[in-house]
Image 1 (cartoon, rainbow, N blue to C red):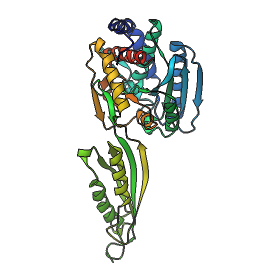
Image 2 (cartoon, rainbow, N blue to C red; image 1 turned 30 degrees about the horizontal axis):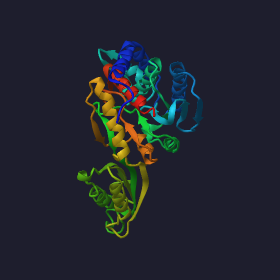
Image 3 (cartoon, rainbow, N blue to C red; image 1 turned 180 degrees about the vertical axis):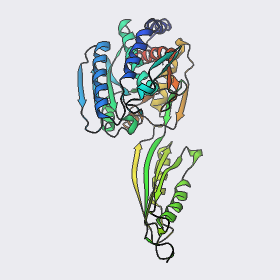
Image 4 (tube, helix red, strand yellow; image 1 turned 45 degrees about the vertical axis):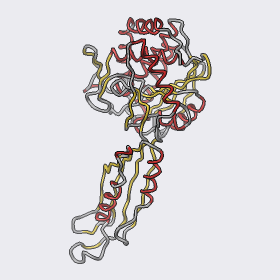
Length: 387
């Protein structure tokens, strides 16, 4: 597989970006300061308006623009840009896990090579890098493909309001690049599928002192079911089962009439997803007086390392070599919008975003040098996919 950019061109892109480091940092600073918590529709709207204006300034007017309005989530913006070949899909979410006001406690700061602030790593730096990669290709008169930029504002809460649009746009694209943060610089070539389920037990209330055998304790039953659910875990197969919340009963002297448990289940393969689904369906009460109901769904499909994913990673490694980067790949437990794109049958290069650490933690940070390197890498991949 041959890249479009020569070694000299790849290094020229990095040099061009390095010369504009202050502008790139200024852009990420402005973006981080526009807070965008997933659960604040007004704040998300303000952030998207800022992004649209910034994108017009950096990339010019798109060939077409479409906004899918969402009532209880951030709107989904689709911007299409002309170029060579069938379009690529560039994915970037603009919501963060941080509540409004966090910027006052955790302001954007640059300390040497380190950038901090809410959402800087997950994943605002990724979008800034993607845009500057495209700017570099245009400025240096290098090949640039046709592409569709999809911005959604509900990734951190499961992309329920945007997954349908992601799948539709993925089917129209020949490949997708997801600018989620890297894992210690590595590309994410495998992500787990995520299932969120609730096991609810209905028992029979009774007086725990006067007649302890009359009722049917939902709390006792949920304890048995928690053990049964936990037994479905198979870490060797990449399957984890976490019982994160347990609730039940009303008073200590009342036989509990209701109880429940919330489960977070992660699977690495479709086969494991099917095994878990069958296991949950087969849950049977130990106490015949009790009733069990399992509700919930698979929040994200499995992201397996397909041949298409492997080919994109090989291309990215080739593009990284002239930059002196020994690009690696990794399988991770977290999911992204890349899961939906791959589920639509489109190969995905995921984790091409920021270099840093601390997603969802107050230690969240990205590096300036990483932004320059990854923007140069993204430019190389984009140019190479101009066929």
